[in-house]
Image 1 (tube, rainbow, N blue to C red):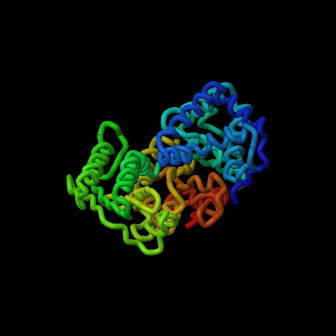
Image 2 (image 1 turned 180 degrees about the vertical axis):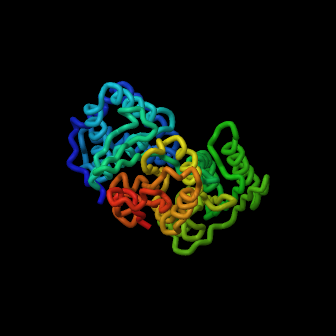
Image 3 (image 1 turned 120 degrees about the vertical axis):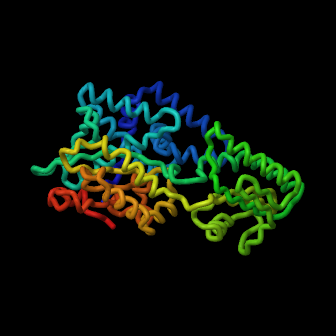
Amino acid sequence: MQPQPPPFDPRALDAFVTLVGARAWSARMAEIAEFARSGPRAGQAIRQRHALELAVERLRGDLIRPATTAERHAARLAAAAAVLARRLGARGRAALRERLLAAMAGDGTLIPVFHMLRTADLQRSRGFSVHFAGLADDAPYDLLLTRGRVEAEVACDVVSAEAGRLVQRGAWVQLADRVDGELQAWLTTYPGRYLLKMTLPQGLRAAPECGALEALQGRIHRLLATRGRRDDEDGAVLRLDPLLLAGTRSDGAGLLPLLRREFGPEAHLSATAVGGALFVIAARAGRADEVAVAVRHRLSAIAPTSLSGTRPGILAMFIDDTDRGEWRGLRDSLELESETRQFLACRSARPVVAVTCASRFELFGVSAPDAVEDGELRFRNPAHPEASATELASAVLSTV
C-alpha cells in the first residue's frame, strides 16, 4: 500500500522553500508561469509537467479550495525533503540542495528528488531501514536498505516517455498552438468540419536546430492556402478530408474520445472550433512508440555506474510524461515486463536483483487500475544469488 498523505503543514512547505532558497524558488515560479504563457495547449502541458512545484506553491498560499489528494502527496514529499535536510550532515544537506536546484533548472522538475524520497518511504513501510547513502556518503547509488543482516542498494532514476516517441508530445502541442490562429481564420472563411490526417515517418521534435516545427507548419499553411487535399514530401503525408464521424456535437464536445478510438492510443490529436465549424488534426508516426525500449536502454546505461556491485542492487525507475492510457497499456501489454526482462538477461544486469517502475500516478496517489496497487511494478532477477532472500522479498518479488 502507498503511504497516505497526512494533512499538510504550511510551515513544512515553507521549510522546503527555505531549503531550496526563497529567491531561487520565486524565480522558478516566475519561470514556470512564463513557460505556461506559450500557448493554451503547451501551457497546459507545462502546468502538468510542473505539477509538483505548482502544488507546493499553491498550498503555501491562501487556499480557495481544499487540497486534492495529489497536492497532499506533493506536500508530504516536500515536507520529507525538509526533514531529511535537518537529519543530514552539512555535506549531505548541501548535496540535497544541489540536487533540488538542478531539478529546478531548464526543463527539469522536482520528480527526480521526490521519486527518491517516495522510494525511501515505500521501503520503510516494508520494514527496511533506509540510509540516504548518495547524499550522505557520495555513494553511486541513492539508498542503502537494511533488514536484519541483509543490505541492498537502490539507484533511483527517471526516464521520460518522450525518449521512446517518434512524434514527441511536447513538439505536438507547440505545433497545435502555432497553427490554431490560422485554422480559426480558415473556419471563418470556409465553415465546415474538416480532418487533417498526418503520417510523419520521420517523427516530430521541438529542437530548434532541426526546424521540424517550422517546416510542418509551413506545409499546413500551403495546404490551406491552396485549398489542397494532399501534400507528400520526404515521406510525410498530409491529407485533408471532410470530417465524417457520427456521434459528435457541433461544438466538438466529446470528439477527442471518439477520435482516440478511431485512430488509436498513439495518435496525436488537436481540435479547433469556431461556432459550429470544426477542424481536427490527427497525426501518427511511422512506427509504434517504443517507451518500454527506451526504459531498457536507460537501464543498460545506468546499471554499470549506479551500483557498487558488492550488494544486491535495485534499479528504481520513474517513467515520466505518460498519460493514463499509455501507462496502463505499457503494463497490460507486458511491453515493460518484456523489455525489462530482456535487460535482466544481460551481463550488465548481474548486480541487479530487481527493477521497479513507477509513474506520476503512483506518486500522486491515484487509485488502481490507473496506478499500480502496490505503488510500483517489480521485476525480480531470478539469476541473482540473493533473489530468494526472505529479508528482501517485499522489495524484489515480481508484481506481474
